[in-house]
Image (spheres, rainbow, N blue to C red):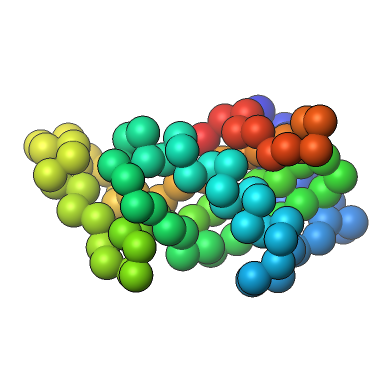
Length: 105
């Protein structure tokens, strides 16, 4: 998995789907259910980094509630939240049969 991430970050031929593009929306929509399973519904992402190369995509983003409200990690993870570095999400996705699928996050 680390090799795939390294290739995506270091490759000179990656592309960045621009905000508002259909591709960017499709990638984030594919990631959303996995994150909502852990953090609850109504998630949107503040994207730090999103890169594509061929059928692969890599995302680093901070989840937040719709409209930009922060997520209270202490309510979800209780005392374990103190050992966490916030709620950033790192994910690798792959386009399969025309759809983006989460490989790891």
